[in-house]
Length: 403
Length: 231
Image 1 (cartoon, rainbow over the protein chains, first blue to last red):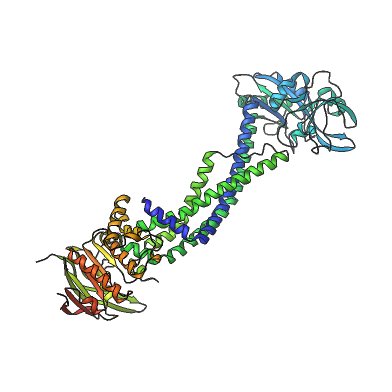
Image 2: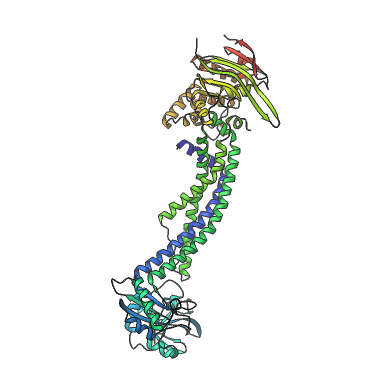
């Protein structure tokens, strides 16, 4: 590739500022959208991967097969008896059922409905490990902690759950009972999890006596050297027989942490894929626009093409000039698009964090930046290739005569 | 006996104009030897422009043969013709035909780009050629910043970029006043003295008289051949 041809192509982009500018604008809109969307997709996947690393892939969940979020469907529950049975299965290091129920929290006559979890205080470390969260202020729940509660991170903030923040040691009303706040959990990064309240089994059972021994979900930790997927199969198989259910018609399911994250990852992938596809439509429009610009450029520069051919330009030289020119339009659009996309995503991430969705953070890997610019260059070059081909096929005699 | 550099042998060129076929050239025979200064004259519609296209390898004939240094170029592809033109023939046009986005130097260097000559060498040759036509002070000017005469001198410098055998000038003084036109003709004469073959297509007898030989074209073929005025 001759540098002189690239320089000539640049000169032409520069000379027709308005038209080049408008074409670049159409390309950069598409690139901005794609860059911003993918940066969020990558950010989310990174977040999931970090969780996977922290929680470890040796965890499994047993959940009732119901409708809605895990544990919220009250028609299906895992019973204490099921847990006792599963605990005996080979390969399990630890197991703990979690109670899960909507509760009503009240402070200064302000009322909120949130999720309350009942945790086995003797297994608190295991539960916290599985939730990848630790106590930030105050202390964990321990055996005998009756009428005591540990709150999610957001209770410490003003205007988040309640108008005023909740302090350590403060009394708070939950389902009309008074509880002492003994600790706060670290920030998880989404408003729902950060507004949960946690009690011991005993407290939960006194609040909801009818729900005793019926758990929303169960956490299992596999023994070292045990494959969690195989363990999941083994638990499914044995628990089904124990409950006398038919294969495929179980009222529960066992999922490894890895599977759950994979499912989540797939959802992220599909969602960002759909959004990127929509953004691609704008890039197709941009590509048509670029093609139009280049056709105009070819018509406008017909005489120049004739001159260049007269002084020895071969068809492929002319082809290169126009393909490079449209590629430059694409690359500039890509470059500005990446910068704008970066600004938009960063701002969006900050806004999401302020709104409590701190897990919704964009990530800007170098491959995304370089890939976006290259992609825009190729879209530009490809859009210009038909007009360029037409230019290259012009007969010098006809082109020279063109006024 | 000098070698023949360009030979047109019974060349026909037929254009399809809608339903009608127009014969722009009807069996044109023309032979030009190395080092000659030849003028081709004729009224408008005589086929002059088409003849320029054939002589300059800008187009191929419908019938007949065109030889450039004994090679038949009448069946070559567009890209092969481009290479040959770039190397063997320098063009000077009535409209100057410079590229406005490029400087004088870049315009002169352009034919060398397509022959794959290195940048430094291109610029060095370009500067020398512009010096030769007296434009050493104007090398970074754009064509729009130059007078008509200066633009034509840039075009002359460009025509010499690849040191071609033949310089083909199509109405080179057509857009210039008579004084500037004389300067341009003087350049062509000097080039001829330096050994270049010069072909001038013109309807101006004052230009043609500088040639060794004048070929008169009418209805697509040569009808008369005379010696030029200065010889």
